[in-house]
Amino acid sequence: MIRQIIQSIRLYLNRNGKFYGLSISQIGFVPNNKSLYRLALLHKSASKMTSKGVVLNYERLEFLGDAVLGAIVAELLYKFFPKKDEGFLTRVRSKVVSRESLNELAINIGLDKAVVAKSDISRNKHIYGDVFEAFIGAMFLDQGFVNTKRFIEKFIFPNFFDIKDLVTIDTNYKSRLIEWGQKRRVEIIFDLIDEAREGSSTPVFTTQITIEGVTCCKGRGYSKKESQQLAAKDTLALLRKSPKLVERILSNKRQKEALSEMSIQDNEQQTITVVASPKLQVSVTESPEFSMVGRR
Image (cartoon, rainbow, N blue to C red):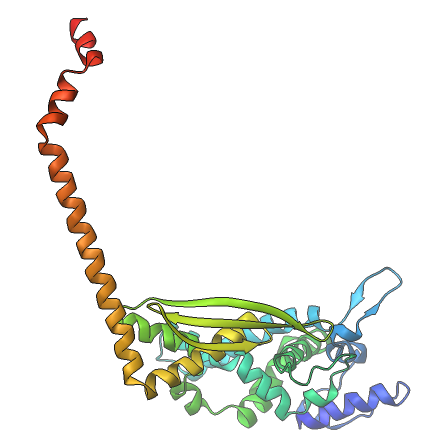
């Protein structure tokens, strides 16, 4: 169904303004402002500029669609899980609207084939999730909240999301790694070690993970968040496969704690020595300045 929507928009874009009426009617509406949907597919590398100097691409619609999608998903989950608490609902919503989830969704419905761009975006897959959010933003402006919600509830959720999987599968690898570290009380550092550009404009970020001074995995992605997630995913896999690595991390933690304890004991001994020093007591009580004050 969504593929038919995308195909219809593509036909509109390529047939001299003639909009093919489509199966969009089957989901309850026919697009009115077709230029919004065209804008939702326009990557920033193919940006256009108005006579007033305003740059046009999908990014503003993405901003709007992100908020609309989040609100709709929150409402649907609230009704679907009437006995679950706020923390549970927040985690499930995060899975639904995660970049990884929306990227996969956008590719499944064919949005990756419909994006208009003047640069190679094939490897920059997070863009497709952005475009899906822009598509939702365009739908919201064109049809309002009710029809947009119906589209998400009646077509997106039944066809592309398995509620059971959402509840049982956790794809937030960074969060899982942090939880792993908290249970063992170890320090985990996500260090952005490189920020480069592919081609003329696409930024690429590299994150290095270190746990208690032990260098673990790197992650390379087209956003800082993506690079952190990829690094965390590989690190979790490495920790599962390598008990020796885990022991090395815990050993470093024990050594650090022992050094810290020794440092505290040394400081306590120095404090006691200073307080009990006869010389220090004499020098203070016999200070000329102190004596002058005493004479007054």
